[in-house]
Image (tube, rainbow, N blue to C red):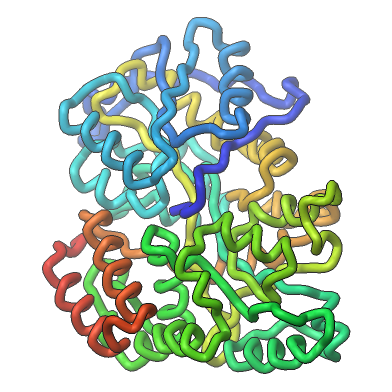
Length: 434
């Protein structure tokens, strides 16, 4: 899931590039041959997502509405907090209300919503899935079926100060944690680096901590849960990952302030010249590149894959997918809208207004886009190596447990070994996905 405030999708100009989509018949309330739902009904629908702070989502919906005046989409904005979004969607599903049509699901919610039949299984042949990166497509699948269509993705990257590394005689960004610490030690000897901290991520007790915890565990060769949701966090590999974070707080590699960091806190610290390295999502690249005075490091940073224990690390796979509420009406319109919203042209426009992680191979490999967004090749590597957070029925309970035990270890309330043992015990109480 995206752990930062939900970033809006955008649409640029060139409305001609957005062709209207052909209709498809059937209804979610009717089953076609083979027992799968077919889709019928045309008319107004709703799109449900977190708050659109930039107004870009509405611009995309306006384009759809102009093309489809009899099938307009109304935007229902939920709170910024992902947990609150999930809870409101669940409440709508449990009451079988038709108020919500198309849902913007965090990529890690698919199993829960599909298992409870809160969303419909979708017709795979209606969407260009083969043109998308496979790990991204898999976030919308459950037990062999497609229940959500990738709309946007996310992969963590290591932002670093190119100017300081170069001045310290370091030719390449680090690929291991030990290299990162050694590089930082060299950089901090420079007069320009006086008072700087080495590294930060997102360590406040919220979803960002789950992401950073999972990345540390996976980057050391461990797992939080296997593909079926069975826990495996009480292992030597997982301990090495958590120990990296715990020891880094203890030896000052990570500043104590980072215990309060969410994405924007880290971005602001990096932009202010307080950090040599920062783990964050691609959205910050364009913000940190601004030359309006808001960033002290514009033109003096780059992004690399996350480091790991013995080599390149593993990002948590973020992103949002489009799902169709099982209790919705006008499902033929909804399918067409989902295809439109998740289309390659919309994502191309999105990249021009809200840089992030597209889902299509072609957008990562486009020379013009790479020139404009140099991080794309690195981001593609991050996404292809990424590991989803636990695919479980009760994701809210699992992430809460990870945050509880992870934070206890980082603050010294528990040892790494005890925190992982307690987390394993809690996760065993969760039902597997198979």
